[in-house]
Amino acid sequence: MAEPGFAYSEAFLQWIWENLLFDLSDLQTISGQAVTILNPGKKNASDGPDFKQAIIEIEGLRWHGNIELHTKSSNWKSHGHHSDPNFDTVVLHVVADSSPVAIQTQNGSRPYTLNILPYLSDKLHVFLKNFEEHSPELPCTSGFHFISEEAFYQQIEQAHREYFEKKSDDFLSFFDPNLLPSKAWKQALIISIWDGLGIPHNREAMAATATELLKKWSGRDIKEGTALSLEIAGFANSDSELIWNNKSVRPANHPKQRIEQAVKLSSAILRQPFDHFLSADAIHLWEQWFPKMALSQTARFEILFGTVYLPALFVLGNLFASGTLKSASLSSWKNLRTPIPASLLKKFQPFNLQDKRYRKKLGSIHQLNSYCKASRCSECFVLKKAIQS
Image 1 (tube, rainbow, N blue to C red):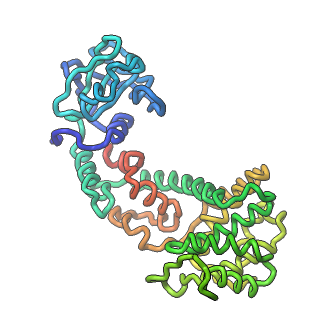
Image 2 (image 1 turned 90 degrees about the horizontal axis):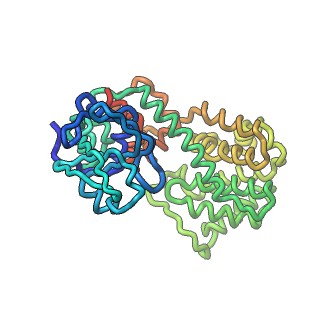
Image 3 (image 1 turned 60 degrees about the vertical axis):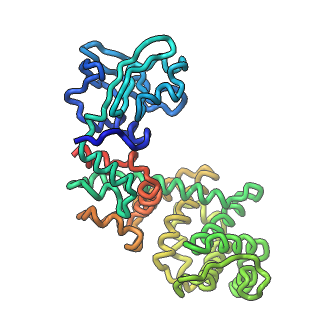
């Protein structure tokens, strides 16, 4: 049975309407007219009603127009829609209100009001309740007896694509447009790697160290680069203003250890002829550098290959209009399988998925951080499929 009122965001109500996640079999306006939704409309990203170009039938009469949604009927007036001519085209006011009332537009018309609160499923209320209580687990892991693995991987693939775009944007944040493109790209790649090796507590300090190092070092002499880096970082003296967090840091992740690794990899990048990066074969340079620099290609470096190196090559392909390089880096990203620490993905365990591919898909991390933790549940295929099922 539906709970009285709708104590959740209007964004959730819009999502419910957009995906028709309610009982459509016997809809009626608050005045008792039968309603059939032929097209819920297209979500409006600008000013005006929430959905445009909707098609509905009321008592057999077809209406084409716009839809406005509110969690309470009174929001129509409190939001100023009653005096705004942009809302004269509204043909249906959709609410989720325990006490709905009729409304009027600026031109005097009275759009029908549909209260969908009685038509919301118990499963949807269970999810919304878990979401509101901020359960330590994912809200969609409680109350649903079925989670579609197809929908889960559809969502993970979307998150995987978005993550690549995000990491490409992150790379550009280190790109200095005042330098020659070749130099700016190499420096951005190096700083991005140092930044990544500083995860989770020392990213800023690592990136700052790399930035200063590149002003003083050619990349030829690794011992010189290491000494300069340790001096810049303040580990060889006490003059540095950089702040390092060594609390609970494992030996393999200690800043000194990471600096030594970063210097070796930076040297390989600086010494590599730039035109080698413009070929699709540049993807394989990463794995070639490690034996030359006596570096172990650990899980951290495998993750950096995906989150730093491939996006960097994609950006380079954009800079030099190389469709081949862009395609190669994007294809490599799509097929990338990277071991992710189980501790980062433990919130997916209650799904009991038979297919464990998500454990090696970097999009899984983006899903948790940018969808689950950010409470973007209303945009997720998993929840929609679970409610529909």
